[in-house]
Length: 347
Image (spheres, rainbow, N blue to C red):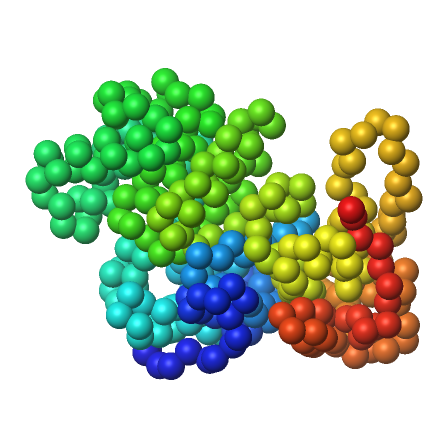
């Protein structure tokens, strides 16, 4: 399905590349011998956000909040239950990726690539680096082996590896080097959007900064757009233009990085920020400790999903579901009290 994209103001002066609108992904709960459906898990529950060209939007939240499910819906690794995923093609047309067939989706995969969280399991141990990085080129019609070798050598140089490494197998590399191979594979087809699913969480801290700086350099050089998924807010601050915070399948706040870190508007965002370690043994911070457990996405509470743990909850929070409202230009919050709360940020 091709149509005009909803005109939402750009945040960085570039054209809008992706607009996700009211995205939902429900997984059925089956029981019994006949596998009768008795409920659903609301993995992604009414998620909306936009990404401009050359921008990095980070999607953050606790494990199990729906970040990876959202990413897999966008790349159509799984079929969304409802909603729209409007992507602007190179020709300027806008395609709803949630509605296109698998066959129509295939040419779109040139423009949307994925970098996996675990560099150990995302590379085939029986394939050489050349075979791994060159496979997308072969799938999309580059039949000449010489051309593929030249392209793979170029990509390896871009990610900080040597061309002679292409004859080796993944077991010969460290974790950081394997992730560089995964990044090279993602770059093979000159994509416009790269979805990074916690790309540094499995790496040593000393290697994380090297990979993050590589991603920033590649973005500047190649004009890439990133959807960066993470739960480490200190990493997110280093790479993001904007941040979207998720809780139990819903986005509860979206803002520029500086705005979100210095003046959060949702209590859950403030609690996440207070949990970020301060690299100073003499520093004393007053942390907000959330009570209770994360809501069950198979049986979420009425009203605001966060109200059982929120220290600022009122009666309206328990009965009425808040909507994601724009309280300032580019600032979206899902909270009944967003306009009145003064929450602590981090310096």
